[in-house]
Picture 1: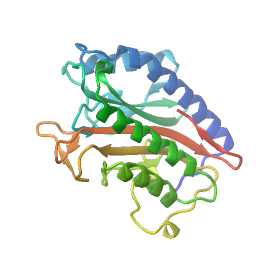
Picture 2: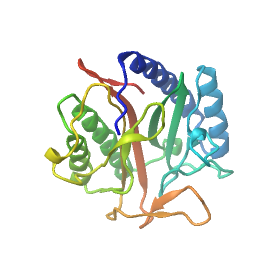
Picture 3: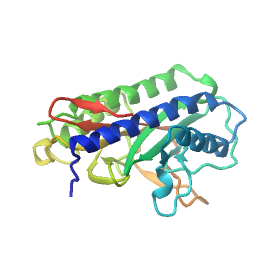
Length: 251
């Protein structure tokens, strides 16, 4: 069931998203070789609290951290640990904030130390562009299928694979709400839900450099999901609010 937000609630979520965006911007310079992912998590907590917001992800049952922090073939939900970052690793920071009863959600993938290759740079550029394409379709009168098709066209068109079992989602008083938003065309667009004012969506591009769309669970880790073929993976995510006038990128 879709939970539509009032203009007043969207204003609160706008504040929450701005706080989360600032926390992420403060966090990115902390990423460099030699620091642990636990350290990044501690700094995330510090910066979210500095913004007057609360941690979002630890409100998911069983998850006690502020961020998910996948590396290389890890796709999503990887908890922080004592693992030390290395130059040239592909790192995703997925972070949420909770403010006045509402969640927002945001993710970025980068190369540790800026150490990259043209192939990896192109891969990450395609993910960013796919998220921009998705946001452009998130307007009143369009359908969820339009968002899915936009992501699929950009990602598959570049020769990469979409992780089909992982999707974007509604967000609000709960971190994960209806509707779920696939990154591929699961059904004809006209059979998908129409977008209406009051929807707040966490749009996600979750994809890999491989050919397989399959995921697996990392051995010895209760949360971490990896690419089944061990290909490098990335995720880009923004929380957006759809209004009668326009679509607001909250993060």
